[in-house]
Image 1 (cartoon, helix red, strand yellow):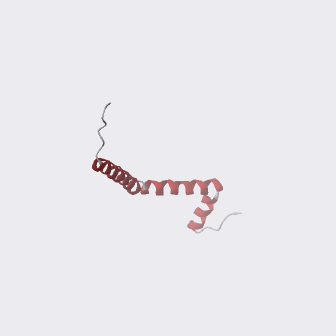
Image 2 (cartoon, rainbow, N blue to C red):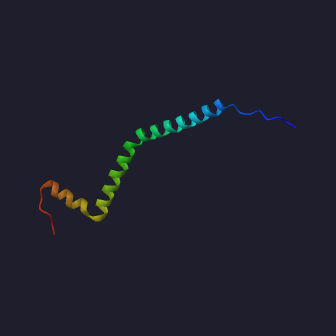
Length: 70
């Protein structure tokens, strides 16, 4: 019969802490570097919806001070 060599508990604890720290670092990286991209994509989506609904022209005329055409 072969004898099993048990894995030391300290090695298991170190591995678990390493996995948790690695995932935390990845989440921190994505949360800090993707904020600008999310804002840009959200702004583009809002502009596309305004354009699709035909509200962009009315908004542009209002900002220029012209009375809206009906």
